[in-house]
Length: 257
Length: 257
Image (cartoon, rainbow over all chains, first blue to last red; front, side):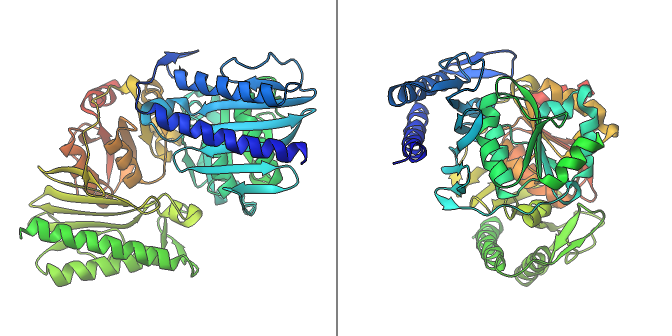
């Protein structure tokens, strides 16, 4: 079995186990802490899941390194070798306030290049995954790439800050040229909207490497463009102002502002 | 059987039939037309559903009057007697672009007072309904009213225009005081988010009577406040800039701007 297939089988098993951990935890009360701001939260579940996933990766792939949201991984200064990106609960604010609309995300990169990415929509029990060169799948069923639509032909997803902060006012003009704005509060769920073709772009003021890594693999497989707000490649060692977009809308978004 | 119960049984049956019409129609190609603007669309399905519902209401309740989105109803100048509000497909843009994330909505008012409201989330097959004095239900299971949270304790839903148009900049400041913004692109689905307690307010620049009518009944049953942007009662004979909010967040939203 190839290394990619071995990881694929294990990741799918681990995501299933993670979903069971989340399901079981609904009974007990969640412990919530603030991180950098009053709406940047972490729960005991985020930590437990990341610790469990980190342990599984280390025992199966001791040579690999891990970049995770909650600090159980390694301090990376480069992307050499095999690197795993983990977001145990993407959309923690939704998880805490809604108990739905969040995702579990895992991605594997080799020498800085995306190999395989996984986003599990916990509420709808749908696992989206993509393997470079092999396509994108929903619950293992192959998907077709959405139409390459322009900005005025589709909906644009954003995060709250892009709409509420004065520093990003140019993006409100861009959003006004689309057919409408959508906001789900989870980078993973917005990437799923792109995979389905439900939106033509997702523009977010601040995404971490684990927010970007799995979607980048799947969306590039489908011909989407991914860059920072200056149109340069994203850097998976730091946070990025990030644009995911159809090729046609990309030029309009990067050039228009 | 009371008039309310008779209507309740019929409405549930009609919504089931409507869902089947939508399901069957997915095979054939949709005919889409622009109404007031490039992102204000109507399809042959909106029209077919409203015509079918209007005919059912007229044959069962010939005395009643109908206020519908697509023009098969009556031209109302008052709310005397029994008035039905129909939105055949709420979230037509999502219906056209995503084939999901839209709702079918029906409400009945007597002498201007809300009696029973229905919002059917077609994608998740969940029917939310409320009867004044009897509570709010999801697929006939009674729901509890969400906690009465303040603005800073929850998420705020809006429509695109509130975020992208300069005229509404004061609401971007208000949105920034919430924990985050969410936008689904369907008034009916945003009302469902309020019913679940997933958001604490929904603020929209332009809602029609059929967008407001069913949610008003259910949300008032749960202690929410509904008004126009000046804090005055909504008028179900015209479009309204509308605030649906927890009692606590309401004062903060209306007073803060």
